[in-house]
Amino acid sequence: MAKIGIGILGGGYMGKAHAVAMSSVGPVFNTTLRPRLEMVCASTPESAERYRQAYGFARATDDWHVLVNDPKVEAIVIATPQETHREIALAAFALGKPVLCEKPLGASMEDGAAMVSAAEKSGAANMVGFNYIRTPASQHARQLIADGEIGDITWFRGEHTEDFYADPQAPATWRTTGMSNGTMGDLAPHMVNAALALIGPITRVMAEVETVHKQRPGGDVTNDDHAQMMVRFKNGAMGAMYFSRIATGRKMGYAYEISGTMGAIRFDQEDQNALWLYRMDGPESERGFRKILTGPAHPDYEPFCQGPGHGTGYQDQIIIEARDFLRAIETRKPVWPTFRDGHEVSRVIAAALASSSDECWKNINDF
Image 1 (cartoon, rainbow, N blue to C red):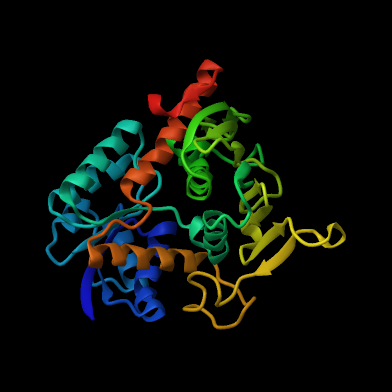
Image 2: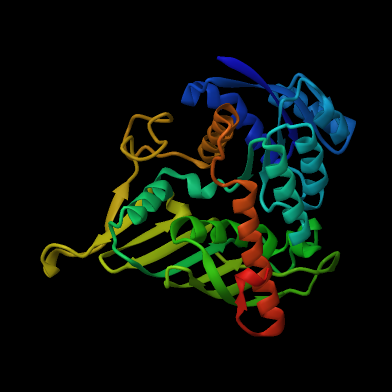
């Protein structure tokens, strides 16, 4: 086993998740590369030191340049706001350092394109943090579809719905400022990524993007609350997606339904250890969706638990993600989703925003 020094930029919600994942991935998956929490970077010296002590890093800094340039930091995790992703990633790739970047790639299409170019020019491992598609249930769904178990795909419905801004009196924060922090920048990429992973490339889109609560206590809202889109996939399937941060009652509504010529699949992240499968076989009187509880027979489940139905959780998705990142570094082979895969998500989002503005269908290849 070889040690690898990890530097994490950002110590908050996702910074903590990645720190815990890097501490856990070795014993969970018995990885050849064993992460060493070398340095954490936060916005102030005080918060950086607090995260260092809490998560077990060797050192802390409030200057991302110090972290990226440190020779003991051999791989980098970016868990900072989108506006910072481009500059950090380009500096890391210039040094040949692998980068795992939280979604979306950057604050704009230009950011994403520059990051893809730098990643591919450097040859260093690069991944985007789309963790939800890594649940054992969704991995199994992806394999069922790829194996043709539900036939040719004809239709996809996906949503990423939450209600953290359902209350109109919830105060304005950084989340209500700037399109990269709105629903299309924050929630939509996860489900668009799922659609691309499960069904394949999207060729065109028609969308509506809306701000419902234009003012909140403390300021104006300058980004979107919810959005809907129709899509056409390259394989001919039709699709529809909905994204919302004001979906009253929805806590983690990352859900999809897929129809095929021989069966169908349903999944809801609020019940992430179950997959619903319909097969068009047997007598009509006995047909119906059946609930599959995930267990050791499903991808990436057994390393966490040997008991079927006992379940995995949110943090386990990040640990699986860390394993994939380490694998990309060790094998020097791309592991999905690369920066280029993440940029494809950004292209769909850009086309959807343009569609909403122009009130017409948009071809993805134009973006």
